[in-house]
Structures are given as structure tokens and as C-alpha cells.
Amino acid sequence: MGQKYYDLASRALACYQALPDPDVSRKQDKRLLIALAGPPGSGKGRIAAKVAKIVNQSGVSCSVISVDGCSQDSHNDTSSILPKSPSWTFKGAAAVDLVQQIQRQTTEPNDLKSPFTIHVEDVDSHNLNVAGDASIVIFEGLYVLCEDLPWARISSLVNERWFVEIDHEIGRQRVVKRFLDTGFEKDYEAACTRYDENDVFNAEFINRTSKERDVTIKSTNRRDSTGSSY
Image 1 (cartoon, rainbow, N blue to C red):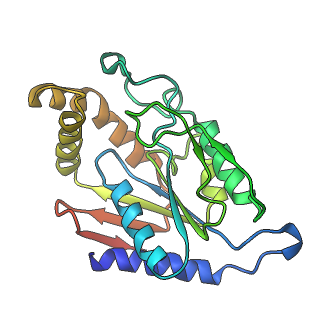
Image 2 (cartoon, rainbow, N blue to C red):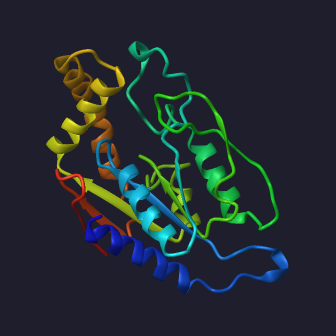
């Protein structure tokens, strides 16, 4: 696993250790919350998963929650998918509410109901009960650092804000491949058209509106290669 993933995990662990001990009367454990954003194809989900794996191997529990499945409408009919926009395609208020729930969560057992799905292509809702005993929780998603409301509230709820930057053409090819692999499009030309008429504007919006960053991660074409700057 690349050294930069270890660097990111080390930062997360250091930030966690630096947190003050919580008020025991509130029955809360110490918990570090990280928001990890990036444009389509930036690899933020893979980065989050690898960082979490390293953190868990250190003996500190870490969970990853993807919020990109929190869409307003079913995506089963791929022909009707509208261009993504945080104002109406995704449930930003639901994302903020979930972060708040986990921020306030006590050590007492409780069942959080998640409005999110694992992937935007999967519209089946599922229960979320992964953060109750996690010391570090990474929220990864397109808009978790967006400066537009309601998404902007997330920045004030988390401890760390990480953003993944990627070269436009590399991101484009990754998304095109994803369209083909998931069956969203049947041929390369159609997949490219979908990106050029939809996701490219989404990527530009995310890059433009995700300004508050504690860490900037440079994603490259090599699957295990990232660079970061703090």
C-alpha cells in the first residue's frame, strides 16, 4: 500500500489523539470526523477505504460512510438520470443530519437509519450502524465540502476536511470506464457523451465550490499513487 496512504492514516491518527477527552457524563467516546470530497473519478472512495484499513490495523476503529447514494430519485432508469446538482439531485439536508447524528452519538447502543445507499447505482436503502463504536469516521462524497447550503454545514461539523484533486482527462477516463463496467452505457462513445454532457459540469462545480481544505490529495493515473499537501 502506497506511502501516502500511510501518511494520511498517520495524520488521521494524530488528529484523533490530539482531541480532548470527552465529558464522561455525556457517555460519548472521543471521535474524529473527516469529510473527504472530490470530483467524479477522483478515487475518493478508494482512498477512504485504504486509509480506514491502515487505521483499523493500528488498533483504532475507523468507518467509511459514502453519501453519494443519497439521491432524490431512483436511478434504476438510467436513461432518465438528470445532470447531478447538489441543490436538487442529492439530499443535502439528509447528509447534514446524518453527520450531526454521528457527531452527537453516545456509546449507548442505537440504530441509525441511513438514507444512503452504497453506490448511486444502488437505490436500496439500508440500516447504518457502523459508526457507534468507530473512533474515526470518514464521510466521503462529491459534495461534503461544497460551500453551498445545506452542504456547507458539514465543514463546521467535522474535524478534518480532505479534498482529492485529479487531472481532468484521468477523471474522465475513470468515469467512462465506470459507466461501461456498470452497464450505464453500452459503448465507449455513449459513455464519453454522458460524461461530456453531465459529469464534466459536475466536476467543475465541485472543484469550484470545495474551498475549505485541511488536506489536498493529488490523485494520479496509477491506482496506488497519491500525493498530498497539508
